[in-house]
Length: 165
Image 1 (tube, rainbow, N blue to C red):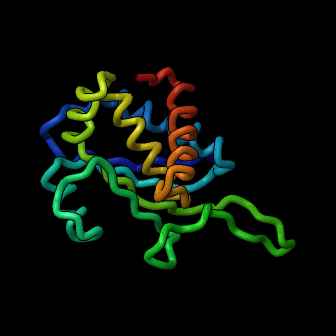
Image 2: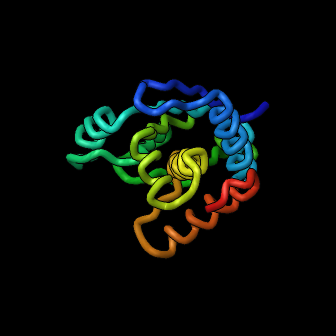
Image 3: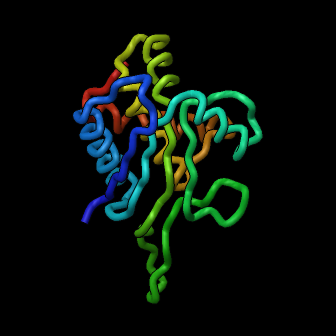
């Protein structure tokens, strides 16, 4: 088995080619392998700034658009989830299998940020997707140390596909 990506494009302001979704599927497999996750489902929805603004306001209380939102299915509290593992009968920990959650990315924000940072739109979408995936499985960046961990993990996965700055 492998991680499964279900995606939908709910915006028409930025064209996204089929090949980009293939890259995102590859990134999902690479990020999953790096974390020891080989099974599970991730739903990706590409939206415009208006829709992500509404979601950001509704779910985070922040009244502005953002680039990516993640909604982990395994959260039990309002805090970030722990890194997802299940305990089997023998007391052995194994990666969680099932729906990991939803990642919402603003195509408009990704396009703008790719231009600001001077790299490709594909690279920015990939970065935001891997960032969102890491949030789904429990990573966070509330302090410098945890942000450094996430940054290193994101860049390592992106470099495997040559998606560098």
